[in-house]
Image 1 (cartoon, rainbow over the protein chains, first blue to last red):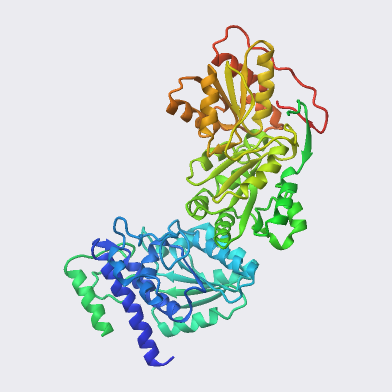
Image 2 (cartoon, chains in turn blue, cyan; image 1 turned 60 degrees about the vertical axis):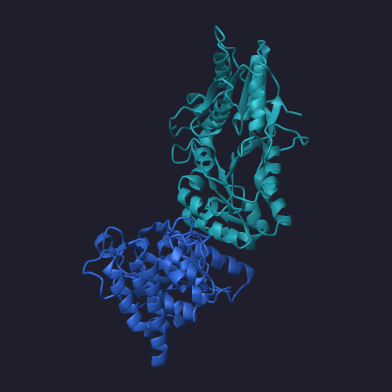
Length: 267
Length: 335
């Protein structure tokens, strides 16, 4: 990959962060950590994978919908001005994504269900012979604790759903703390491989690695997962040490510092 | 026209009707939760293997997938036992089917204590769970004639449907003139003293109980209410207003099902009719050898419906005895 392409993808990721800070700022807290961790993954997917109107996107952890909203203007699916209404009373941009949300296709939020929905969409495409249609499903590592994910994983491999690609934001963060302190998920790649999936375990903030993994994932003859190792604090050095990555508090001077940092890096 | 108990029976009326429907509705898919023969869809599998999907023992995944398939223009019929169709994947039904208001048909077999398999297999709360969900249509039919017609009728419901079905030999109570309706409850028999609202396996009990009470001069109305939601309030109001007291009979907990639905209407209309609910009295049942024994133990026998009618009218003395019918093999009579 050319360094100019790398730079473009990194700028795209930082644009997602920048918009997320602006969306969360009026509330003083919110799902910013999820964008900080998944920004590169989604920037790469939206640039090199997802085709609006052809492919389908499932955001299983519904609170990650903020990253899809942030990418919405470039996809032509969200009016940029409406981002300011994120999570407000009466807004179309609900903080926990539902099917009425732009960009994504199902009601998320009750964790562990999104992969099954993605499998259903992939099966529908298979049954209809729509071989070009791809289903992308964004999952988080914490929700792998839900048994339904593994029901869906088994079914997808059994049916050979090669049109299904999971993007796993492995940020080691859930409500009660680091996922690794609560349930051992490792070895993640080996688990998915043993379930019949192609698995790519990469640094989730390295756009080159992500781009390569996504390219491989798209050409498999079986379902594939890109395991993106990430951090809920990545790309915003002004955040205080030990900020709660699941639900970041941000107000006053910290908002200004965050916006300044991201705008400077994108300049 | 009504047949009289003991009723002739047929096997697999659902499975046959479903295959006929699938011939003309190409969008139909059939999902099985590892209970293919038990839910009569071996017939579908044989006929349309490319539209048959083994979901395996994974009900949560099955329901969520069904929702996604429905989004893409398919009409998934999901099959398993009632307990596994409702209790286990309740959150999936909420988020993947009911909230999106998708045309998924959830078909749950073995209602109430028709299974002697114990609490794991006895769907005593499925109607309550499904009735509580916005957008859901809930159907509990009484016989093979209704099953055949209900399968066709639910295909045109724009949102989700829960269809509750007895397994095995299905009685034929109604002849071919019967018209199943998703909108109207059916006044099978009119009367002025007590009205019995019943559905599913308890309709035949209600009819037998009504005969027993009529024989001693009590005027009994019997209303078949196969659609618990949306409920035909008007028929309930009209028939209850004509009677002095009300009985409900359901093969389900008395909490949250037909009895509760009727109670809501009576209270909201200020009808002030005394009500007795026949059903599982806020209790689990247990495993046993026969469903008949469970129906008797948990107060779901014809005699229990007779007693409820007698008592709710404040009659003195002992209630009349429901006759014990001789039921030849291959025929069906209520307990």
